[in-house]
Length: 427
Image (cartoon, rainbow, N blue to C red; front, side, top):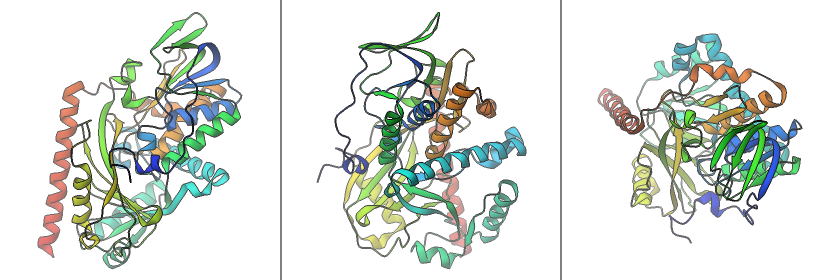
């Protein structure tokens, strides 16, 4: 068994094969995609499906960062709450954005179904409350259904604990349109489909410079260059200098994931994904061989903390003490890109440079959505991507922004603890 710091469970359960060749020499294309995460891979796939010669450049291996290290939950919506979106853009515009997020979910579902259904690992997502508020949760359910057509099932405390056997939880809402999957296998599938359709993917080919030329744009790497009419930036928090306009708007935020040894247990009694509805909560699911994948924490600390496996185990056992003392076989950090408004950055400059980035916190559906919107804009002049104009890149505050995010996370944790303490006192 590898050390917990050697690999993610995702990497341990795929065969990547040999690395794709580095870019060499000068090549021409209609579009050059920078970044081999899910947004870039989807954009490349959709561009070649629309007849555009496309080259994708990845600094390391495709999906080696957040796209292949996340929780694997796929659901509608955004990291920003629908109420906050409505306050900013109005109800009708918020409904349009929500429908676009649903389109991203269905794209992922469809691509898996027609190519490799085993990538999907379970249906449904249970969002459980850690304080007693049945009326409030029912009101929220009704609001989602009335304003957004988002139908969720309400479960009583007894019904919730029948599936998630812990005294920590009370009522819950079940999103039956959500599902969970193996994100790295999905990303590798999209990469293979893009190549089969004609895209060229070059790994270990970091873009070093993007410059304007008379006939378009030139992207330079250490060993080659791409000349293209369009350049799509999808590197998120990993390179915030190549495209300064979006780079200054992104904050790198880390989250942690652990996977246990194979278990025989009676605490988690569902194959649906689950999470608590705290402002800064846990998310988890059963994966292959009875293992529990457990995620949680948000921090601006980008280095992996010491004793991560034990930290994640303590968190898990605080919710499910009857698990005993399971061994953590894998534990890792994942670095995401966030904006101050918690919405993705999707847009273009009108000169051939485009961006689809900052999908932190809710990326499995929105990366698909963003890649498709830009492919349609480039190939057909579709302007649906402009619905994200109210969420233009805004300076994230540099080091002061990171301090603010961390302070905000601690404040969310404190509010969660207050809510839970009130519920215990009432009981």
